[in-house]
Length: 183
Image 1 (cartoon, helix red, strand yellow):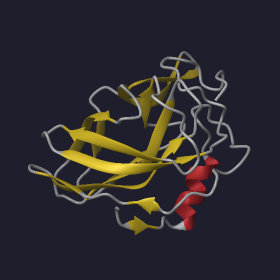
Image 2 (image 1 turned 45 degrees about the horizontal axis):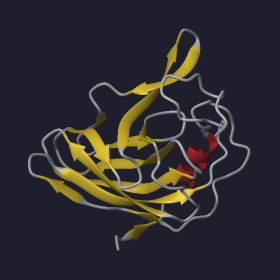
Image 3 (image 1 turned 60 degrees about the vertical axis):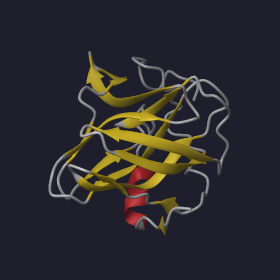
Image 4 (image 1 turned 45 degrees about the vertical axis):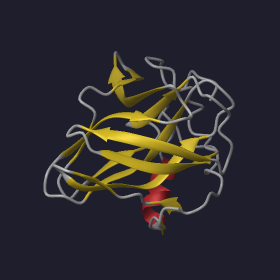
């Protein structure tokens, strides 16, 4: 079991005000879930990397996404280049950007860069870990294992909790216009 850490309420409130990839206000707060896990991992070239408040949007089938805050406790930049999970045979690192006047989701070129002694937010409507072709339903409270691979070859293993999140009714389809999905 990983050590537990509670996120300050202001940070959690700010995250909840962000919509899913649609940029709309959520219609309901995420369901209560256990306190987030902070899972430390050490990369040979970069030092300690962890994630706080890791969670996965509940979904019956198809696609979902994982979120949290990546933390770099080292003095060097760290880049997450890929991920894996028993929940999904295919995982991509995604971003949401404006394109042609619309918000779209696409793979994040170069991965997620975490500055020295800094953080990188993974959140609805922004960068996230995309899970495709789910192997099973993600229910509230489910514990989902992940492994992120760093540019230097190091890894970060953690467990994320399944949470209901109304968000912008996002569908997490690559290249889709946000807000068009059925969440």
